[in-house]
Amino acid sequence: MVWFVKHCHNNSNVVKLKYYLVLHSIIMENISLKMEKGFVNAIEKVMKKHNYMTKTEFIRESIRDKIRKLEEKEILNDKDLMSQIKTSERNMKKGIKSRKFEY
Image (cartoon, rainbow, N blue to C red):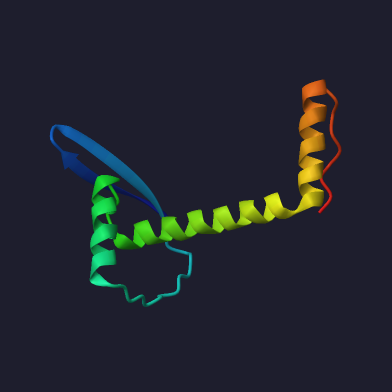
C-alpha cells in the first residue's frame, strides 16, 4: 500500500510543500541514538532552515548521503574501474560506442 503525505511549512508569505512517499510494506528497524544537547540543537536549526519536518527524515537522508559519498570514494580509489570510466568518456567524446563495464 502506498500513501502520499503532505506537510506544509509556512515562512513569511511563502508556503513550501513536501510530499513523502510512505510505503507501509517496508519493514523498518528502530535504532536508539543518544546525542549531546548542543548537537541536537544544531540539527534542529539546520532542519528548520532546510524545511525538514522530523529528525528521522533528516537523519535518514544524512545517512544516505554519507553512504553515497563513501561509495563514490570507493569508486574513485578503484583504479581499474576509473580507467574503464575514463576510457568510456574518451570514446563517447569520439563517438565510439563503449563496451560494458566489467566488475
